[in-house]
Image (tube, rainbow, N blue to C red; front, side):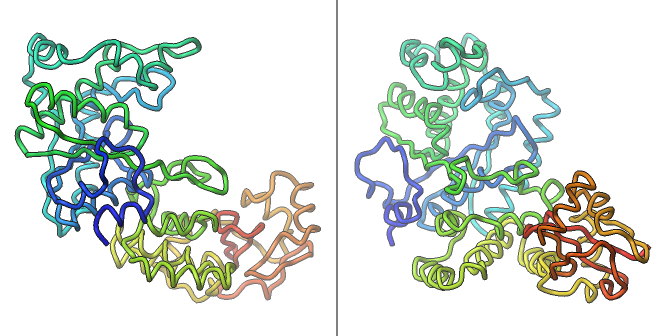
Length: 415
């Protein structure tokens, strides 16, 4: 496949400033920016567009990857109903360092240029910026952009001059990277499209050159209709201290059937024929979660490495009851204890009491209802009784589950 064909097949083209998609098939230099205002880690929402960047790189494009040390000091107004709180320079530096490390890991083994826009903004004077940049932007055009109009309109949260100016700062980034790095394409998510439109006109007005922008659609969970990338516990982070590799793996294992083929196309580098083969196997036995298992292994390997992905798969087999917890070694048990609530259980303990202690039931009435509804399993076997038996424990361990999700599971250990 050509690059344009691959991006179309993977569903990674939404808005563009060029007419003919084959423009993409001649390698040049692109850039992708990462916001560092909110956190010191990327999420899987960010990962989608970084996968797009990897595809451009593999098709011969030169990559300039930008961490926004300057823009993060202001805050992107896009997608926000109210003003962001400003972060200190020290907080932004910390966030930049964390995201820089993740970007370097995602592009390990590839050639790329990593830049921080604070390096060129820190010495620009206010009057210089107004004359060289502000003069080229029409207020009429800026206030018509959706994310600004929504904030300024009736019921909007308002917008400060600082956040209003964010688009100009991003436009300057593009001009700077065009002049110094030969960048002719900016890529990003569709939620950034308004900001992305700021660079090409500035380059055209200042340099008489045509440069372009390309956005990809936001990834949507088809089962819920909501933006993809959150679990019940919140955002799914690339930082293993925020989302452990096992929890990361489990997020993908639990991906919805409706969207799993799209996720395989967006978040992995598997080829068309291989994805078709995986989906054929998946459709023949959906309960086996064949597609989700491939997805989890591929994405976890990319983000956390081969060893972490293999270990996460091993731990997951224990968490879902595929492998008896009694056989787990201490290294695996240490991770299981981090992932699940742990309850020490004495001989003859009441099942309902343990469900409450594990946080799997909200009250004695709720616990008894779950037991009566045959919704409680010990070591993967449904139970409808009041007390634990000696045979429930092997090697002093047992798994207690409510329903089907591993997050509704507790590790039981003999007191």
